[in-house]
Length: 424
Image (cartoon, rainbow, N blue to C red; front, side):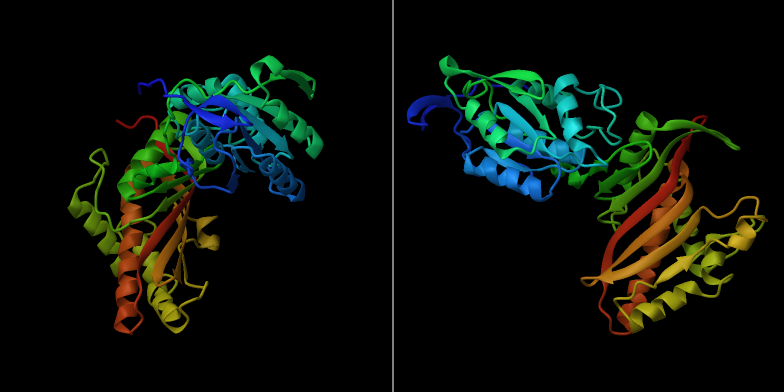
């Protein structure tokens, strides 16, 4: 991306003419839990924890006219949204991180370390940061470096004194010749308003990637991906496993693995199959789905999903339809594939699917499915398409009985989400 030098405008700022960038009144590009103030102000305030103290700090900042003040709880997409909004307003030259940090995500620590050290260009992990989910996967490296150059992050993490916050904010609006020196947590800052950053607003959006997919959370122990389609989800998760997965030796070979991967597919009706997906031919996918719907056993295998769904434990699919028909808001429409007595002790290769749950909300049927182990590269599309076909069957049966329900989303959870290293 190439930049243009912005056309500075002379605005009346604190009774004097100053060089500022005339951004729109609603200049933010990402939604969030924040309040807008004076768009020409050089300060943004980020409070990690939305507690009583945090709310008072945000209120104090807005009363002093900062450009924006609000909360950021997560150390990945939350930080990315803050960066996007700061980059959209070149007038912002300081980001004050103040208040209590979040105990799990530690978003305050992650933001401070992001500004100080940046990210590893390969793993996208924030450098020198111990926060467990401090990955910045959705932003271009260029955007991260622009952010680090445009602003100074003032570390007030753990500070809850509103008067100290007022002192820092007031220091940031001084003329350069009246700069003030303020010490916070042992660090001395020379504060003044340098005017707008010399380059045009950098417009980048994280949530705009929802048309294809975006990463909500990323670590080796928990990853959350939102995707438009099954194909988009496949491409994104393969990329994440190959890039961030840990090597784990299994009885079938070396794998790369991410644990607890949650994939939320917004439009499962999209039929696109990734070109790189093995056995992606339509006939294979259709046969796999048909076998599950018909409850077939597979000769030579200890189990089949169809047999577990419709025969072994009774016809669970028919029972689910009946349950949803009689009680559309039920939370009991669950199909189970795992037999503890057999699969923990006797079955050599037990089922990977553990359960499927179906819920009707706002006139749509949604599915949440859980797998204990998932060979993602070779089986994801088959398995999600099978869930989708079962959902179609359920909605058709419900419509026949007068219950008008459409297809909703699929949330796919894999405890061990892996690919085999020897795959070619």
